[in-house]
Amino acid sequence: MVKMSLDSVQVMSGQAKELKVAPSSNGDSRGSWEEKEEFHQDNLGLTTKPTPVTGRRARKVEGGVFFPKPENAVTIAVSTRVLFRTDREQKVFQQKGVEEYLRYQIEHENEPFAPGPAFPFVKALEAVNARLRELYPQSEELFDIVLVTYNHAHVGIRLINTINHHNLFIERFCMTGGSSPIGYLKAWHTNLYLSADSEKVREALAEGIAAATMFLPEKQTEVSESQLRVAFDGDAVLFSDESERIFKAHGLDKFFEHERDNEDTLLDHGPLKGFLEALGKLQKKFYAKGQRLNCPIRTYLVTARSAASSGIRALKTLRAWGLEIDEALFLAGAPKGPMLDKIRPHIYFDDQMFHVEGAAEMGTIAAHVPYGVAQKHNAKQNTSVGK
Image (cartoon, rainbow, N blue to C red):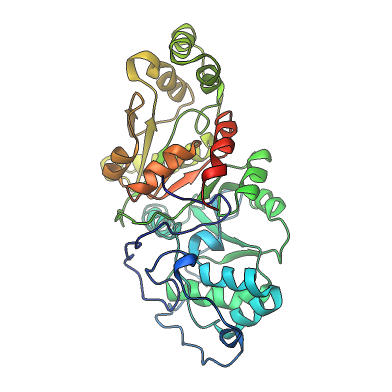
């Protein structure tokens, strides 16, 4: 069993595959916190000469790139701890407290953070934006990325330096100084929130915001640099957990019977239906320009449902919603990890930790959607899951 934490992004045992990005002073490929050297007080003083940030991109905003209004954009909010590797800083905070943490951040503010699990996803969003700007120069229907962090504003300098170092185009920050960011997410019209904090993810879901907890696998497969690939589970992710409740309460035979009897009854929406809709809306902009076969967004349904026994209802529901899934994989209970390894998505969403762990074992960036009846079963299993 892969040891994972619902409270933070952590690297499982082994080495994370190096991403094709500029080198960083933080986030080497060694294992998790427990494998790193302990920090000492001397390391927290303001004595080390900062390493300059290199590779900073010149920005030309006036008369060039514009920023979409939040209500027109597809807004993706990412936390610092999933966009970047902040393991070292997190340990300073836990061991030494907030004041030493702030001192450490200020001392190292010219040292960029290493990429975290959401980094390839964000880079793919920016690649899609580049294509959209070519086809629709004045359109505000773009991905808009907002960096959401509990950090004090003092840490903002290091975050800006890191974003410039990695050539990311993120201009919107939300630094809450320890306060909950959920109210701000609603003000940003957030379409998706990715965080390492499972409690805040649950809070966002309760407010109707699509959200998921991200994990960093021990190994990481290479993903496309030109096509955004997003994979979804079906029940309790795109759809409600109605059918899953039948299965958990009465078993597989009753589940199949329920699906046959309700084949023409649409499933209710799940927490990430809106995000799939947003992706579909942007896909159609490429289709309208004759780019269907060269679309930089591709979506996948990867479900444990059986095709003949329970797949029709899922497909009819998507069609009635006006949503197109590029590829649908009905696995009839088979492991999802090997299929996801072939797809190589930038992110995969599932409501069950068992499948999240299976995906991580194969090197897929997986995100847990803590929604629906399966969370009762996850809670029982978490007593043996590494914290």
